[in-house]
Amino acid sequence: MSIRIAPVPFAVAVLMAAAPFIGTVGATAVNKQVSSAPQSVAAAPAAAKAQVRQVVLKTGMAGGKMVYLDEKGNANPVLRGNVGDTIEVTISSGEGAEHDIVFEGLNVTSPKFDRKSGPVKVSFKLAQSGKFTYFCSIPGHRQIGMEGTLEVTGPADASAAAKPAAKVMGAAPATSTGGVAAIAPAAANAVVISQDPNAVPRPLGARAPQLVKYAIETVELEGRLDDGTTFTYWTFAKKVPGPMLRVKEGDTVEVALTNNPNSKAVHSIDLHAATGGLGGGESTQVAPGETKTITFKALNPGLYVYHCATPSVAHHISAGMYGLILVEPKAGLPKVDKEFYVMQGDLYTKHAFGTKGHHEYSQERAADELPTYYTFNGSVGALTKEHKMSVKVGETVRVFFGVGGPNKVSSFHVIGEIFDRVYSEGATNTVKQNVQTTLVPAGGATITEFKVQYPGKYLLVDHSLSRAGKGLVGALEVTGKADGTVYKASDKPMADMAH
Image 1 (cartoon, rainbow, N blue to C red):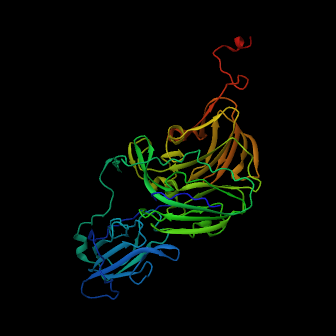
Image 2: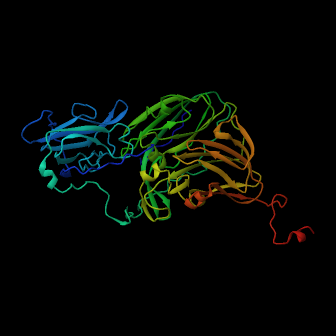
């Protein structure tokens, strides 16, 4: 059997984000875009006379890391010059993703560049001897390998002290909100990114193990976060969470991951259901426009999270790159009337919850684990306004619930209901009965089952209830006849009700 999820246009989504440290050593910086790169490369030997040293770099992958490459293919080459020299660096994106180059301590930062922008140039004069680090300031890129050294020889340039500090190219714009940049207008082209909780693959039933194929495209796009509020989401197949995958214990699973050509970031997939290769994250670091494929055997039954494993992993996950894969046990799961797919995420933005406009990801708030928004299925109102969850009195319900995170644990609860059965931590052989609230860790999952016995609206929440005020509420609508023996409300005093 071959199951295929159609590719869709793309938007890119670990742990910590790298921020450029800009020093105050005297230097002059001039940044401009150029149409073509010069062919000469910086010379190594020192010279008595100041000269212009030209360096040509491009970004790429080497040894499983993201790096800068010189014209000979050397990764993160040592750049050399003398005090008084001018360094001209022309740099382009070899794999198509978005990058920049920062020279730490020299007050020099290039504009951001990618495949569409073409190469950019940064030019600056060396006024201080020593060793200086250059790196990419895109969150996570420095940690995954984009870091090298500039060695400068010779005495300090005395004239540098009289020069004003260079303007930092690419610095934050002027602000009008006490140090936080004014928020941009909401994206006019924003689309609904929230996953339909009804989008659950059908049960597989009793069958022999087989090859199951999935094709998934990572897509970066402007999405609706809340009313009047948008965010640049990084997604699997244009939805948050990504598509729910369903296989059988013993199946061989083939996943082909394509990164949309318009992406600005490298993406990957780490499936917690896979054994080896860092769950696939080691082998699926996919540049824009490329495809990589992994194959694994579904050895262990259960409900598992999958997510992007490209630094900054926290950024990629928070921006929407997570989903669930169910490995059905050989005997299958008990039959129920309705199944739903729900995932919780924590989102970190530079502006406060409810601020109208286009929000940007905040690596500082993510590092401090201070979410601005909490969401079910990617956006505020996803399970109350955008999608409907409905059942009838007497029906049995199963909720496949996971926490993408990247950081916060959930105390999953349905107000007005009791879970008849909970498959603790997504393990299909550990069933608990009569559970009010179940803990689900970041990067974890659970399966809850219950029979609805009374009509009305039942609220899905994290029982860390302050989070409801930051967007974390869903609704299950139950229709049918009310049974007064199950629940009854009255304005009469208890004494009158007794008669």
